Amino acid sequence: MSKVPVMEIFGPTIQGEGMVIGQKTMFVRTAGCDYSCSWCDSAFTWDGTGKEMTKQMEAEEIWNELTSLGGEGFSFVTISGGNPALLKNLSFLIDLLKSNNIKIGLETQGSKWQDWFLQIDELTLSPKPPSSGMVTDFEALDMIINNLSEGQTTQNTSLKVVVFDDEDYNYAKKVHHRYPHIPFFLQVGNENNKTSDNLKLVSLLLQKYEWLINKTMLDHECKDVKVLPQLHTYIWGNKRGV
Ligand code: MET
Image 1: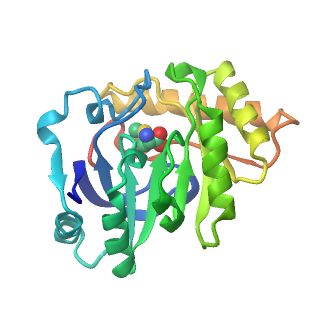
Image 2 (image 1 turned 90 degrees about the vertical axis):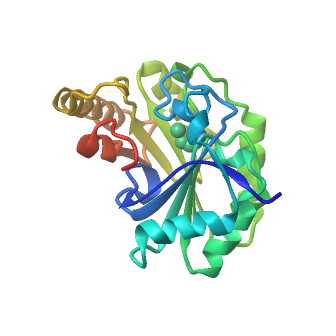
């Protein structure tokens, strides 16, 4: 069986987060997660509510769906979840995308390793701060970052921590100082991931972005970092499939 559980395929759109923010991309969202973050914006991938939407798909089927949606208008595919790093079989999709000259971005919390990480062009490791309710396995993250550093590839890796409060910010600093050579991104957390009142949401998110920027600018212990909004929420709010 070379199938993987797919929750949704959409695009073209832009990547709203992290190292390739603004990148035109297609998205493949896999089902299943080893985490259950309190503020997860894609809880339907793991809480049972998206069960009917989940399809076991072969790499070729995923590719067909991508090309039927995006035609010849894309050269980048982002794989997210859930935690796609639970799926060994994603190697088939990754090989197929590569053979079609497609660049690949992948989002994971950095709790599990897969050998195919070495083939990802833009890999975001996003360990979760205390507000998520999750506890980071730093041994696993150390191992992943070591494996990636040893791999002789053109692969790019970054770390991204979502920040909701002061405690999260301190956690983010700890992560950055543990892996100072990895490009580091701080991202504004979205506390209101259910609301459809976009004007109110954007105004709150802008305030939180300003708070995070001010905090970082005044902090002499945080120098080589990038502070980003979750861009897609400023445009589409909590809407899915964009
Ligand atoms: N679980 C992955 C991550 O933490 C994918 C996005 S989270 C909904 O980056």
